[in-house]
Image (cartoon, rainbow, N blue to C red; front, side, top):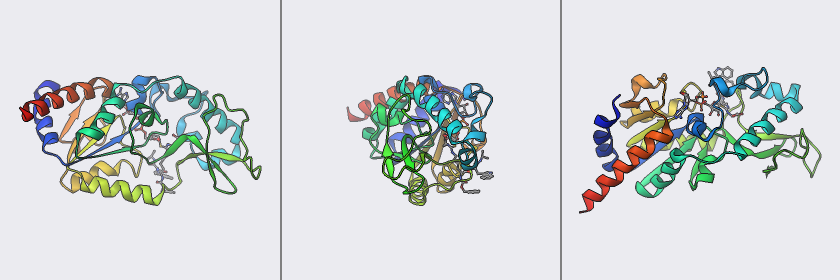
Length: 254
Ligand code: BV8
C-alpha cells in the first residue's frame, strides 16, 4: 500500500476518531534491537521460543528456561525504546481515548513513557512465587541466582509471563476485548497476528465497525481484513504518520 497517497485518508479517519486502540507485538521493538519471537534472530542456542515458553519446559528444566529469560533480559536492558514506541506515547495525549495493548513482555512501552499499558502476556521484569503466587519486580542483569527462589518461602520463582497453553489473565483479556469492541480505529503494529487470543482483538474491532490499520514489513493473516496495511517498519512509518497528523491538527485549529 502506497504510504504517501494513503496518509491523508488515514489522518482524516484518526482526526474524526474518539477511541483509538493499538495492539503491538515484538516487531515494534525490532528497531530497538530486541529479537522478535519468530524472526530469524529469534533463536536461542538451538531452541525456538515456542519450545521454551511453556509450563512443561519450565517444570522439566527451570534452569534452562531462566537462562533463556536472563539472556533476553540482558538484551532488553541494553536497548532503548525507538521512535515507534515514542509516537504511541504522544498518542496518549493526542487522542481523546487511546488504549495501548501489547503482547510484548519487554517493558519498552513503559520505558518510552506510555502510562497505561495493557500487558496481555505479562512482563519479563516481574517474577512470581510458584508456591505463594506473590509478585516481585526484579531488574538485576544478570540475575544473581539462576533459577531464582522466593526469599520468603524458598520456592522457585517463575517469570510473570503467560506461556503457551496457559490462559491469559481474565480481567485483562475482558478489558482488551471491551476496548477493541469500543474503538473507532484499531492499529495492529509489529505482530505476526498468529498468537491467540491476542490476534482476535483486531478482528473483534472490525466486527464492531472499527477501521483496521496494520503496520508490518510483511503481510500477515490480518492483512486481508485491514482497511489499510502499510508494508513498513513501525519506527519509520509511525513518525511519518504522526507528523502528518500534527500538521492537520494544527491546520484544523487555524
Ligand atoms: C491460550 C510470553 C487458552 C512468553 C507469549 C495448542 C495447545 C495450547 C494452546 C494452543 C494450541 N494451539 C493454539 C494454541 C493457542 C496458543 C497459540 O496461539 N499458539 C499459536 C502459536 C498458534 N495460545 C496460547 O497458548 C495462549 N493461551 O490460548 O490459553 C488455552 C489454554 C490451554 C490450551 C489451549 C488454549 C497464550 C499465548 C501467549 C504465549 N506467550 N509470550 C514470552 O515472551 O516468553 S506469545 C509470544 O508471541 C510473544 O508474546 C509475542 O509477542 C507473541 C506474538 O508474537 P509477535 O509479537 O507477533 O512476534 P512475532 O515474532 O511472531 O512477529 C513479529 C512481527 O513483527 C512479524 O510479523 C514481523 O514481520 C514484524 N516486524 C519485524 N520488524 C518490524 C516488524 N513490524 C514493524 N516494524 C518492524 N521494524
